[in-house]
Length: 57
Image (cartoon, rainbow, N blue to C red; front, side, top):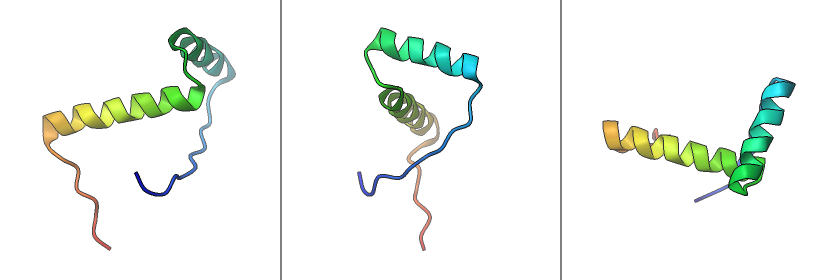
């Protein structure tokens, strides 16, 4: 997986409360749910468009 990076997010308070509700429903932390969603999005993209190549350099 490599080095773990930090990501900051600005989000409306009401949307954050709703997101936390969804996280609780699925039994995940907010971080865990975001990682799940990001991984799923990348997998779907790669199925449609092929593997994503890391830029060299």
